[in-house]
Image (cartoon, rainbow over all chains, first blue to last red; front, side):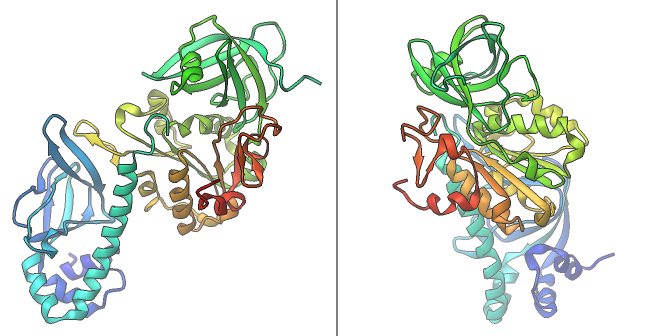
Length: 153
Length: 275
């Protein structure tokens, strides 16, 4: 059976991270499974975790009165989900729901915040990876907002 | 030689309502004249009698000899008239015009097709060609992005494509409700982890210009050579033979030098706002 450190090492999000840092992160992690339909996070909750998706798919969604639940994006086994734990007030901004059985590593944000405060290199390496994910999602969201497939475009 | 400015009379022999504002028309010559040969990627000028002309890509199987197929979205007065045509209605048709997708270059290569919104229509004719001549091509992958699940063009046919063993497909929408179980996100996200060999791939892109820019950039990241990426450009085409200049795009006339361009021909023009 693979250790948490092995699972993190195998995930593309942590590619290039030193074994020492992987081990530090693994100390804040645990294996977790979600059945289809389970929520990984709910809007408004305390944001104290993020998930490294190992298999399966989740959707990030929001409830809008009059429109119901609208799916904003989807994350699969190449990705991570949850970055509200990085910044105050540490509140989850969107619902995250499994649309397939999901296996993930759950990382404790409080534990990570403490470790990154005392090891700024780890903080930099982690922030660099999150910044890349955030940039990709920001660019994708901008394209979605442009509504490029609307009539007449 | 037939005058390229003179429309021939065609009649509508089949109509399918793809979306509330989008219809596909099968057109056949009203007389017993032969249908001109055409290639995937080319377009015809459709003339709604008394209303005006509009350039519409061929969206059907170009190996079919008895009719030509066009998918039209009603966005203005002419397209509204064409998209609203019924069985037996007549219209004028000039064409085919323009440069086709590079079918000869594509032989023996892996093919990635990226369609955005109504951009699936011009690519459907090349999908038919690739499937009709399946052995001549390597791995074929179709990525399609559209606005919502309700806006999917050719939804039933896409389901049939998904069931084929010789065509890989990916579909994504920009936003969806919970009843949609497919992918949500921009079309470029479908490329992540798709695992095609960029070095041996020719990619064809058709959709809104910004979607083509981002898709081309992502394909290059995946190792596809810029010279192996082709885009289908859209401009206001009037004469369709490079006389009038309405569709001028930098040094090109889209009607005559395009609509299909290799990316290096037009990539520098993407960044010029005035073009």
